[in-house]
Structure formats: C-alpha cells, structure tokens
Image (cartoon, rainbow, N blue to C red; front, side, top):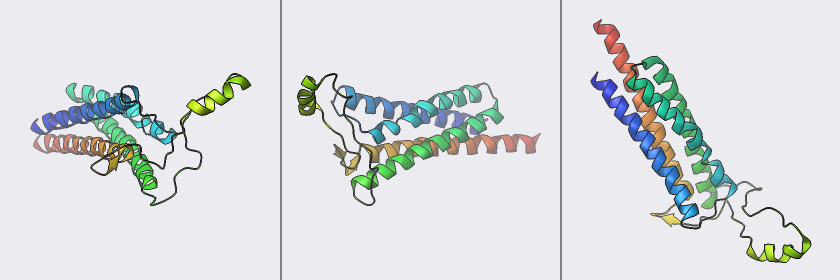
Length: 174
C-alpha cells in the first residue's frame, strides 16, 4: 500500500513537472517572444502525447488497476526518454558536438504577393536549430528540455517499478 501511494505521488510529480515544462516553453514563446525552431517544436510532441498518458496512469493507480497503470507508465517513460534524446541532440548541435539538421529553420509562410516579398524578407526571422537563443546555467532551451523530459521519464520508470514491486509483495503475502 505504501509503495502504491509513493508510485501515485511520483506519477503526479511527473505529470506536474511535465506540465510546468511545456507551460514554460509556451510562456517563453508567447510572452517572451522567443521563436521556436522546427526541432524545438518537435520536442513539444512528447509532452502532448506523454502528459495525457501520465494523467491516465494516475487515474489507473487511483482506481487500483495496477497492471494497466504499469503499461501506461512504461509508455510514458519511452515517450519522455525520446523527448530527452531530442533535447540532447539539439543541445549537442548547439555546442557543435555534431551537425544539426540541415532543414531546420523557422520563419513564416511565403508572402501573398511580390510586392510584399521585400517587407516579408525584412521582418522574417529565421531561427536556427544550431544556435541557442537563450541559456541559463550553461543550458539552452533544448538542454533544459533534455533535463525536464529525462526527469519525467525517470519518475515514470520509478513509479512503474514501485507498482510492480508492490504487486509482487501483495502476491507473496497472499
């Protein structure tokens, strides 16, 4: 029972941490004016997939449906491990440890007329996947995403481990 409660709390922490991370990304974009690159936008997908799964896992834990909760938590772990990998890939490209994607840049759609083309060229800001637009303690947005996604993945994996251990202890004591 104590392991199940701890698993529930860790799952809730993973969910809240993931929500805080994606809210921060949207906040920097909408309030701070930081324009995300293509790879930055791709790093948000694990949050859009993994957070509903984490919420489902939490519901399943509360309903004491341990088997399905275990499977969902393993899915959450995989999704956020992938997200962490994307963050590591981009952060490494920003530090020039390896090449980044050749097709990565932001901007807007093509202008509607030739007359607007010059104005569009002056106002369009291309965002590179290999240049960090912001850093805190040496980590860029991509680096912080790697940390946040990795943390969510670790919490989900530990939660799954605890649920499985609790289920095994219940089987032995029965």
